[in-house]
Image 1 (cartoon, chains in turn cyan, blue, brown, purple):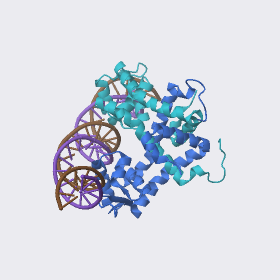
Image 2 (cartoon, rainbow over the protein chains, first blue to last red):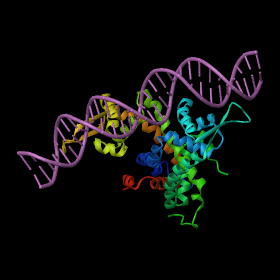
Image 3 (cartoon, rainbow over the protein chains, first blue to last red):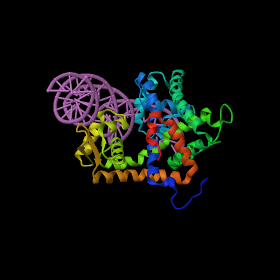
Image 4 (cartoon, protein in one colour):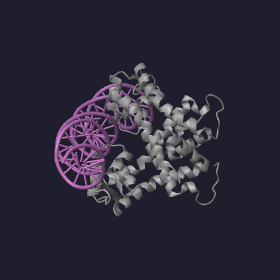
Length: 160
Length: 160
DNA sequence: GCATATAAGTCAACGTGACTGACGTAAAGG
DNA sequence: CCTTTACGTCAGTCACGTTGACTTATATGC
């Protein structure tokens, strides 16, 4: 868009540049997640618990099925993780008043506290990267990641 | 750099923007890896095998210790994965002529073939995203991901 | 030359988090 | 009323990470 093709193959489409992009994603994701693991481990939790706490926190009163669609795991997998979070008082379930089959999930105060401890470290890492890269780079980061994400999932990121 | 601070808190540092950045990374990484899983599964392999095949392919004659440092897993974990790749003829080990304690890892033709099938799908995904985002966005993607990556790992990406 | 350090491999036990398949129950809806 | 949907659960499996202990081979410093 901003940089109309300078020929059939711009430099950034060379194979080594594509490999660099893959490795950037690999290392960034790895370093992005490792900091939280210590906090999670202190509760005997893993990354699966983090993902549940995060998405329930960001989507209060989400149904189990919706959460499964976000996480793309089986209900049996979610069950073990969610079961512990509920029984240990991080997440509450209540019946949907509009549709009694649905269970609506939400964080308790304890759950919000855990979620905010976890998110804070990741937000700080992103903020540091955003700040040092600047607004133009942030927009580029968004555009490229949107392009990597499956078309079906892109809807999630429509801006107001 | 490109966009010097417009005040104490530019818009892209707002909490919801940081959450968006986190979710972009989560969904991009997930969608980036899922395509390869089918190919891997057809060999009875998982993502750990992919990572080994990829990094050995990109770093011929890498030592076991160096590979462990990249992957940040224990040698016992690597052992199971690497052992299968060697015994099934995807990876070779040979003694380092300069230091007999080291084993140098490399892909066989079979290993290169698997690696290239796997990488091709991921390269295509990145290329599509890069192409549609353009050169300026690509540079932004690189800058932000570099900022997310631990300082110690950033050396890996120094350009010529 | 010997002691120590390094590189690699191995045995054992364990935990998390995915999966499949089958079954049960409650509520909604045509 | 019957089917579909939402949820939960029992049972078994597998990938992939962990810790800890121990061995073998080679390199290196004193």
